[in-house]
Length: 330
Image (cartoon, rainbow, N blue to C red; front, side):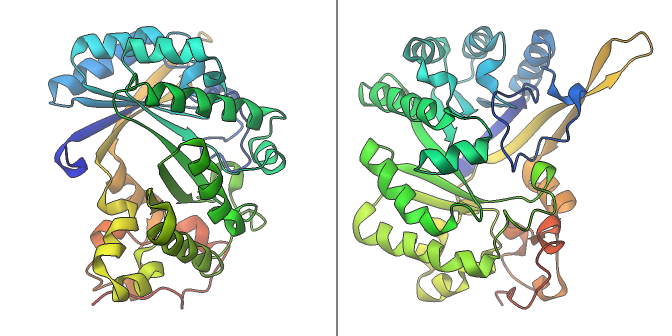
């Protein structure tokens, strides 16, 4: 199935998490936002989108694996008729192989694991939890084993947030996880928001990271030959690649491969009686990202990739103000 031919809904289960990543865009230190969405609300959202024709579903957090009824929710989604159920996770709880098997039996068919280094020191620093790297690696190995047994219906992929602590080692990250059996890696440039708002110490410039992006592309074409894509990077940063080969350009830019993603997101408000109520927000991620998080510079206007690219992250420009690096495709 071509990714662009199906509608995909991501349901946020709440912001509670067992990591404290220093670049978490969901963290605003509000205890209200650390709550889980109640089971009935999640189920109602699944029904709503199923009736709208969605058959691909994903669960987001926070950390969805610590959602108290994650098995029941996955099972309910499968019974409802969703034929592709994905889980975006930090992988810590997946170190329990039995738990992995329960998720798969319940209906989860794809796992996207967030891990940002091939070393214990950097990963534990970025996630803020000592020992998380060891558990994540065990979880990834569990998934790779189950995938090789053809127990996982779709795939296992990694999501790496590119930041100042890891951008020089991206090629090493690919090599390390390839040896474990991973063949699908997404590199998302850090969004300096939430915990990372204004963090120059975490946010490299696109220009300084660019050579390392190109090294991965070159090495992947020559030896790795796995699925590698880049996200949250203005398309013009890869203009040299486009001028060399349009097919390579489209191969490595995630925006050309991502499905049409809608999001169901809940915010909490405190009531006068002390209870909490959740408020649902439904939106298209691409449109929301372009309208709320990005800015279209004057030099972006007229670029024939502007609709897919969306522009430059607003929070990036509060840290790095040099806009001369951005050009357009005309």
